[in-house]
Length: 535
Image (tube, rainbow, N blue to C red; front, side):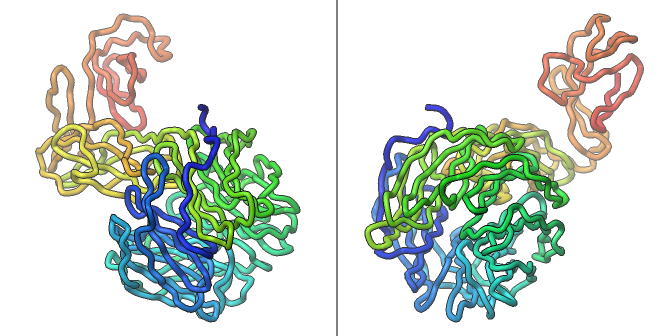
C-alpha cells in the first residue's frame, strides 16, 4: 500500500451513547480515549482500543453538566487531569476539570470556571494549551453573539482553575464556526466562517503568561459564504491548509510568517462536502473526515510543503446516513479512529479504519549551553507521521539509549515539523551523559540518535583527547568535537581554488566523508556558522 491508501472497510464500531451530539475525542494514555458528547446534558465516556483497531466495552462515564451543554471540547490538561469547555446554562461559557486514570476510570468534577457570562455559542469551538498551566479557548460570543472571543485562564496540575487572565475580541459578522491553532512560538491564528460574510483569517500572539497582543494581520480569504465549519492545519514551513465554505466547500493553502503576516493564496480546489477535521499522516499526505448530505467519509489527499494541492489519494465511506460531526484522531501504526454522531438515533459512535501512514521522525543535535548542572538539548521533528505529535522533548541518562522512563522533559504537543530545544536539568558536573530527542503520536515514542556530552562547570576553553580526536568546551562552555583524519593532498576541496588544504583537523558539524567540510587554509582561522576552526 502507498501512503494515504485506506483499508476497504471499517475495522470496528462502538456505540458509546444513544444520542451523542457534537463529539470531541482525546487520548487519555496509551490505548485509552475519552469522548465528550452533548445530549442536552454533557457527558464524557472512556473506552480502550487495541493495536488492531478493535474496541473493548466502554470503561466509565461522567455527567459533567446536568442541565445544558453545547459544543463540548475535551483536552488533556496535565497527567491524569482533563478539562472540558462548553456552552452551558443561559449560553454562558464554562470550563470543568476532572481526573481520568490510565485505565479510563473517571473521578468527580474537580473545579468549575464560568469564563463567559454573556454569549458562548457556536459549532466549532477550540481549546488549546498555551504554556505550563495556561490554556486558551476560542468561541463565538462575548460582547455580542457575532463576535469571536478568545480567553486565557490557568489550570494547575491538581485540576484547580484560576480566573480569566486575558481576553481577545475580534468583531466579525454572523460567526458560524472558528478554527484556532498554534502556528509557531507565541503566534496563533483563528479562521472564522461568517454567515453571509467573508471567511476571515486573523493572527495574534499569546504570551506564556496568557496575555494577548492586538490582532497582527486580518485577511478575508473568500467571498461571502454561509458555511458552518472551517479548519486549519500546518503543512510545513510557514504554509497552512484551510477548509471553508464559499458557495461550495474549498480547500486552500496560504502562508503565515513567524511575524504573523498572512500571505496570498497559494492553491485552491473545490470539495463536494464539509471537512470537519484535517490530519497529517506523513510524506505530504493529509486525511480529512468529510460530511455530505448525512454521509460521513474519510479522504486522503496530497498537499506539498510549498502549498501545492495534489490529487485525492483514496476515500472510504464510514457511515451511510444521518451522520454529523466526524472527528478523526490518530491511534497507532496505521490505525485511526473517528468519533461521530450517527444512525439510528443520533447515536454517539466511534469507528476505526486503516490508513497507510508515514513514520514519525525525530533527530537529535549536539547540546548547547552545557554549564554547571544544566544543558540545552536540541532536536528536530522532520516528519509528523500519522497525526499530530502529542508529546516531544529530550531524555537523558549516563548509559546509552535513554528513554522517557529515564530523566526526561516533555515540551507538550506539536502540530508541525521543525526544530525545538529542551531544558536538561539535574546534571552532575564532570559526569558523561547520553541524550536523545523524542516525539510521540501514539503509545510508543520515536527517538533520535544518541548525543554524548559531559556536564561541565566553568569549563570554557577546556580541551581533552578522545581517542584520536579532540573534544572540548568553547568560550560559551558549549561542547564541540574536532575530528582527526589522515592528511589530504593538495587537491582543492570545497571550492578552494587558490590555496591547497593541508590541515588534518576538521570541525565535526555535519555527517560527511569529506574530512574538511568547510574551507580551511593553512595557518588561518575561519568561521562556519559562528564556530572557530584552527588549522
